[in-house]
Image 1 (cartoon, rainbow, N blue to C red):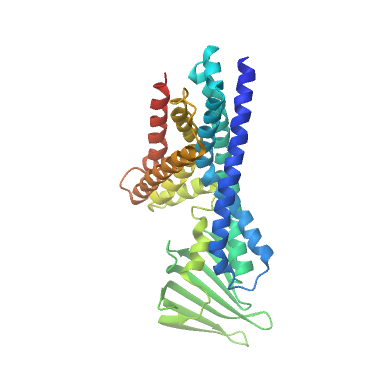
Image 2: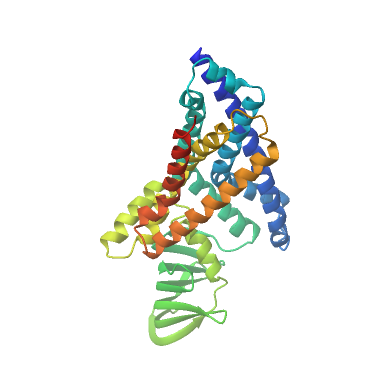
Length: 363
């Protein structure tokens, strides 16, 4: 009998979860589409590219909304079982609250495991494709030929290549710049090497510049400049988009490897460590929200007044409170106010303890 009840409740919760996810995901994407429509309408691009961009955004959006979907589905499912007196029937058959809640926890754990696989691999790859569609296909900006958090190759137009050792997080400062100019026929005509570059008043300024000018007869003329302006159709926002993979668009394995490398080099890795653990912690939130939703709903298992409006209201209130605590914890971890792993996990652990406490007090 227990197995039959398990799969019956599991099926109800799964269907409600998929329905809630489809609803909130559709609402979010529609709102986001019309918000970005004004921006995209400035570019003469095919409408299919807009749809492609939002398609690549679905994995991350679903990952972020999964906790809300799990919380809402658990409240609605328990509410439905209450209205049909099925909870009372299960209790009269001798089932404990833990046995009744097992299908919810199993489904919540499954969603969390899928979410972990999403944030570990699928979301970073999808975000890179979304950034490519937005920047290169829609906005017609130069494509980064090769990029990593500490190396970047960019093709600028048809005759220039730009190699950069590192870019500041805000995209306004670069170090280790090598700018190559190629003339027709395919011939290297100039190389600019600079220690630093900064973006001020809409212009990139190189400092400590060495210019190598290659003449047609093969001779190389070298000149040195303290400062030199360079015309680049690139803004700090472009570099931020390319380097957004550090760490947002990195796979967890690559992010872990990068943290180890910059730590070994003596750099501060708090920002990256916090983001690493925040992604792992957030993948467990659907299970925590399922625990919270079941605990709150089962407290009123003797009544039949759990309506849709009340369930949505509870979901939004709990979701907003969790997001506020989670965001504060991540910021504190990134700034070094608390240990990065603590800042990343604080909201998840806090809400897990609240849900466990409510569940243990069920009578």
